[in-house]
Image 1 (cartoon, one colour):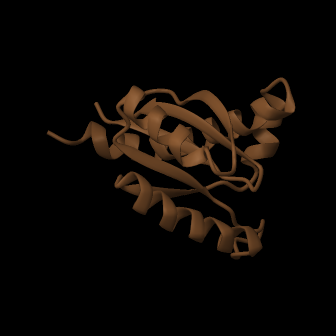
Image 2 (cartoon, one colour; image 1 turned 30 degrees about the vertical axis):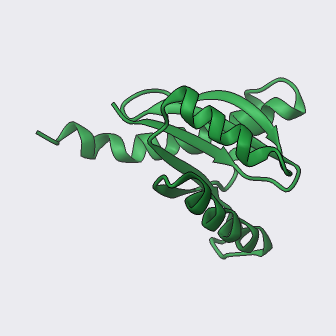
Length: 133
């Protein structure tokens, strides 16, 4: 089964989660944004045999793009270039709020938010994978 890596992108911290289609997403770690980020992400991708990335897509509550969306577009471009993996987006509205209810510690909220994003992606693709022969 394809292993997926969920990303909750932020300016200073980046939440990471891992899961498979048809499985449950699990918070994995929080990485600091900066020079070492891409090396650390590459190591996780290799160690965990990641096949695809799922990045949270920030929209306003009304569904409009905003400043965070623009920053995330740049991150998506870099993610594709630096990892060579397929990169998907998943609506992340309210994921940090939901993750905050289920997590302990501010840093862990970012990993929990990544898991919420990834789980949403997994759930939305579960019906399609069940019907594949």
